[in-house]
Image (tube, rainbow, N blue to C red; front, side):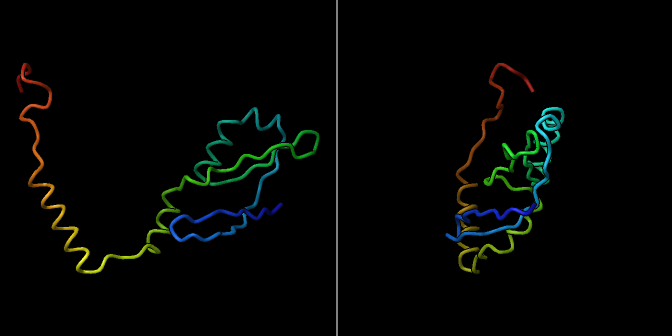
Length: 114
């Protein structure tokens, strides 16, 4: 079964429709392999339709707000890049923050010797 999933892309205010292929499994199989099914939904972005007596009763889908490293690698190049002026201002701000930043001599306390 092919399912059309509709999600909202927050940064661009657009709706994206993706085609996902769902795996049909029985509720019994789902209960016996629950951890594996959750991991597959989370890490492989798989979707499962749970059936009882051959009738669909529930769906397990990946959470839309979570991304895998592979998905992140695909969308990062689509983000706008900083111009030279913006990059220089950003670098200046980072240098200023680093100059003001101080760390204690001994972060574990005065009573402990290094």
